[in-house]
Length: 398
Image (cartoon, rainbow, N blue to C red; front, side, top):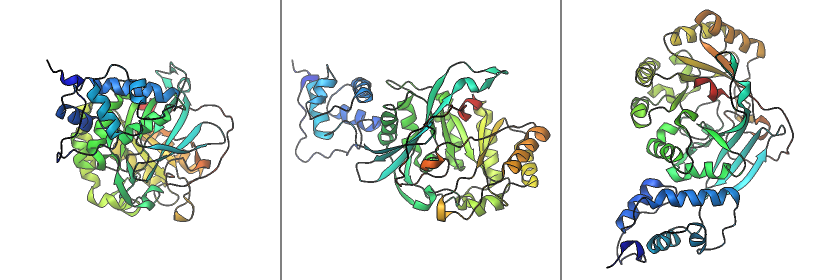
């Protein structure tokens, strides 16, 4: 009796088939497997062996490597993989830059279409964080800041990525491949969608990539994944139902609509009052703290009155406010960094007057243009050094 698992796959003449960018494009791969009679149970098996192989070695010579590194697949699966994927990953690691303190590594990744995206590895010490007044359990580990788009159409005036404009969306597999590349340098525990692009403008691919990351073989916890958004209201409204348990971060950056529109042109489409209503509903459903990101721009949003406006805006929420020192983006920037004293005063008002948990983000990777707001495709050249690990903001919202 003919066993479909042992058939050699050949594309019938005239049959149309979707182009899969990455073997980690889960939905597309399962769909194609189903069309040719291959059980979808083999998909996580392929990912497992591929991930283990690539994490330990980049030794992949030719088409026959599929059989060598991934055993016990039906012959039709090997035929499909060979005909669709000449290499195990669709993207390649073009360059790696390490900060002088050795706490940050920026990966420049070339996509199959020739575009580039950046991902940043940040190393922390969990024990430096506090939980119930005591040091957190754990030790050294790493967070990966990941990109969801090539460029970004939000146009935030303080962000280097916005200067690129929007180029294209990444597929779910191209997003996951950033994690695969990063795992050759560090054991990644946390993932934050705070790299290039607005994640919720690439909603389906981002949600699917998160589902892949939380399954075999990556097994990341949803509690360790954070998606940051400028406030795409319609997407926020469905996010909890699609990925319950996910951490949400909102790039608020101003306590009033007029200031938001001044520094974030896309905010015109998402009025602050409606955004806060959406966040209130999200919190009611999720019962989770929301991370509020607030970049400190000298003379724009960093005065005492701004702190009081922000406190009143957030006093009914369960949030952690993360104050972000502005990072220079060279000649592109029209802004200046707020002084440490003003940042400290801002923090004291939120904490003391409004009892809002407020932190100041530690700068990481600024010397390799890997800090917040600096991700734009360029090639700095920096060397390794040594420094003490930091605590991680993502631990604060758990």
